[in-house]
Image (cartoon, rainbow, N blue to C red; front, side, top):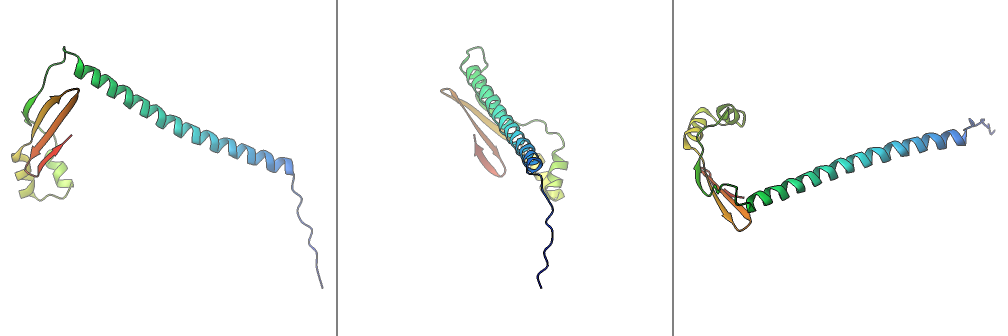
Length: 121
């Protein structure tokens, strides 16, 4: 025996309208995300151009030399949250940090030195 069931009827226009609305929503979400990232990238490029212009400007002070860190705020708490024990925190806080800044052409060269070693930018 075969039993036939009546299939529910669908309104094609209604399904198309719902699908079209959903595609429009997804398209808007995609465009706003891409637009926001593009805007952030353009802003960062503008900031880099401004920084380069300032470095080339003779009115900008030359900060070349070695600079020693004199003050830190909440370093103890920061190190504690990273898992440093009390002895390690005391050593790091007392050790200090030195930044060596040099202007090489239109580039700024920064070397940071501390008890862990040195890093360059």
